[in-house]
Length: 410
Ligand SMILES: Cc1ncc(COP(=O)(O)O)c(C=O)c1O
Image 1 (cartoon, rainbow, N blue to C red):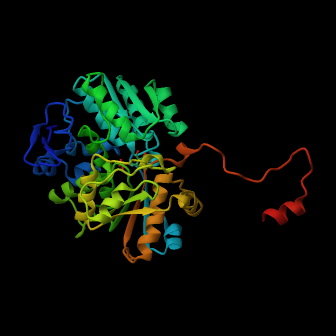
Image 2: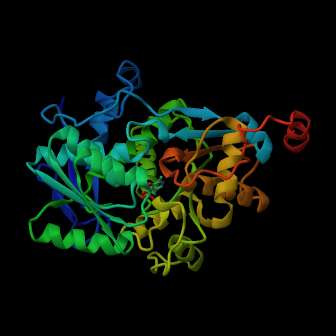
Image 3: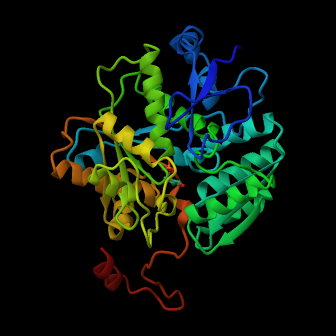
């Protein structure tokens, strides 16, 4: 198979192009886009060719920066399901609602996609130690894919990162360090280590490959909808990589003539009001966001006070006709319960923001109840369990007073 990637392009200055056959990071501290010969891709990756391929992210390999000579570091042969949620739709007052459930991927979050590709490319270009600053799920996925690929990994995480994420690093043999700051602050230290040649930095958007891996979420979504894209996508946004990546996927498919829908989805970046720098920037009409001081949310994946790709997210929202919006931190658990009790799907606290966003956008009549809406469940809620929920106690040393029991609980 030929490689269809032609070059990398600066996300801030399109006139700057870098070669695709060398390991790339950023240009002038700004992220890079991967660019492809899309006519060539359309010729090689027809819909019927795709239909015969294995159901994993490598089915879209012509739209990834890999060719035959690059062996993927992979753990799955699986596409994440698109779950139709009719009861939740009815409760919410809409007709068509789906959850794309990324919790069912190998490390129980959507981070598998980007890390599978980032580790593949770093290893291909001879890197033996990779590192990142992470809020949890990315660090866990890096640790697992690095172990799978036989290279070392190093992660800086805030000290209050969920136990599951820290355990992933521990079990996979990653060198894990806890910090007393947030992801943007750790990110600067990881960069210093990179500049010293201690490791290769694969933090969010600091190399161009993770973005391309995450793009497969958008490609998969389009294929699952028979190339007729939904009207609305609600995405819990921290650094915003997957939102940017999905939009890139849709634009590339449009240019390849793959799409059968007349319109593109409106993309909504949803944040908690405990950390919403992109919402502030969107509302102010700014292209770059200011740091959200004292960021605080239980949805650790979206506790991102400054995002390197802020302008890429904000450009995407405006181009797609969507918006950034913040919802109440205090209601995240309630929204998790709403979905689990209606559909049996446990969504993570990050994705719970999207239920609040749906409520808000419907109330403001920004979403029409007839529209086709997709929520991305970015990770398994089970990764966040710490304290057990409070429930009534049964003392088995005493007989049960069934009449009292029934009266109290039913
Ligand atoms: C569960 C979860 N949801 C959402 C996000 C935000 O991802 P993005 O960087 O694409 O905004 C993260 C990132 O850590 C995450 O772990």
